[in-house]
Image 1 (cartoon, rainbow, N blue to C red):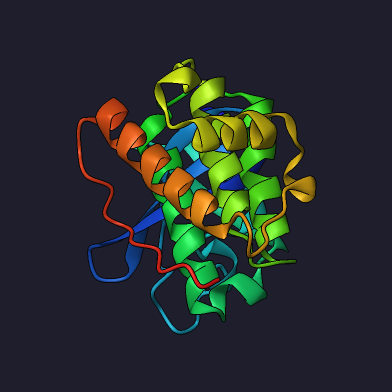
Image 2 (cartoon, rainbow, N blue to C red):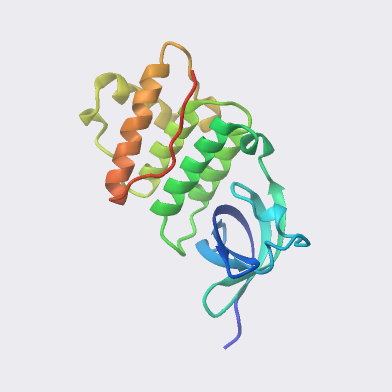
Length: 210
C-alpha cells in the first residue's frame, strides 16, 4: 500500500523527547487536523529542523506516513513568535492556549476555524499583553467544539463580559484597570469549566499582571 504524503501548514502544539536524538511532535495541521509526527535527529546540534519545530511556531511542512506516526521530512517557520518566547507572562499564556487546545481537540479532524483561532491568538499575543486574548480564545474554542456553557449561570458581570468578548475579533478585545478584576475572574471561571470538560487538571499556571 503506498504511503501517504502531506504538504500542509501546521502549528506546533507539543514536543516529547524520543530515543537519543528524536522528538515526537504534536501538530495541528490545516490538511489533516491534529496528528503526531516524528522529527528524526532534531536534538542533534546539526539539525536544520530544530529551530523550525519549536512550540507556538506556525510552519510549512512535508510529512510522510510511517508505521506509527507521520515523519516530518521538511519544516520551515512561517511565524516563530519570538516576543512570546522572550516574555514569561506571554509564554505562560501561550502554554495555556496550547495545553487546552491539544487536550480538547481530537486527532484527525481538520477545521480551518480552529487553526485560524489558535494562529490568530499567538499573533495577537505577540502584539500586546492582554488577559482577554486568552479569555476570548478559551471561550471561542469551547464554543467551536460544542461545549459553550449557559452564560446565565455565571455572575452577572462575568456573563456580560463573556458575551462581549465572544462577539469580538481577537484583535479588538481590550482590558483596562476598570475591568481587569472581571477579566481575571473570567479567566478562572473559564479555566475551571474547561477542566470540567477535560475531567483533568490544567497544568499551566498564568500569573497575570495588571
